[in-house]
Structure formats: structure tokens, C-alpha cells
Length: 114
Image 1 (tube, rainbow, N blue to C red):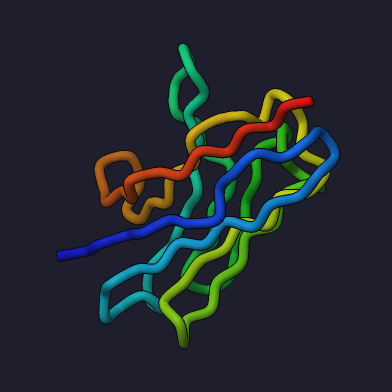
Image 2 (cartoon, one colour):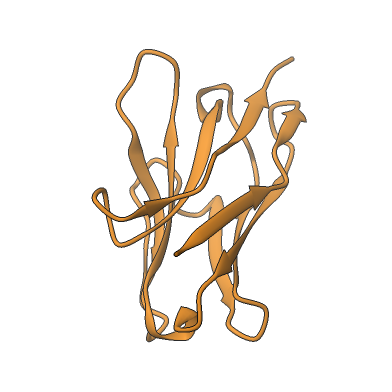
């Protein structure tokens, strides 16, 4: 059974930073890709960062240059460093492995507000 537990969300002003963490309970963590998605109210869930098992990283244009995904295979943890946060980054952020049909964490709320 794969479990993903996110932490690190919160309330931040525009321009601020947050770091999200996702702890994964699996023995093959280093051999799989990990991703962060987000879902804002009334919108579809969207991919915000993906890191492959070999370290290949992809971002959509909306977060490129502001968000950084990284992983610590020794800790079975993937991180999302979010800088220069904007109001439109407000969403529930989910950790994922295996794509949309894979495994999901419970989500952590990120609110960017004045």
C-alpha cells in the first residue's frame, strides 16, 4: 500500500515563499517518478511539477522559474519549493505518483492572500 502525506501548506502574502513536503511510504521510492498537482476552486486539477526517477524535471509555464521540485531518496520525500507566490497559486496541492490514475496524498492547502 502506497501512502503519500503532504505537509507545509499555509497562508502567505503575494511574493512570499512556502516549501511543501511529501513523505512516501514505499520501498521503491528511488525508482519512480513523483509529481505535484494543484486544484483551485472551480478548476480542474493541474500538474505543477514532475521529477522522474532519473531526475528529469518538468514544469508548466505558469510556475517555471518560481517553483522547484526536488527529492531526497534517502528520506522517501519529495519537496516543492514555491517562491514569488501569486494570488492565482492559491489551491490545494497534492502529491502524486503514477499519474492521474496512480496514488494521491490528502492534499495541503496553500492560500496566497493580501
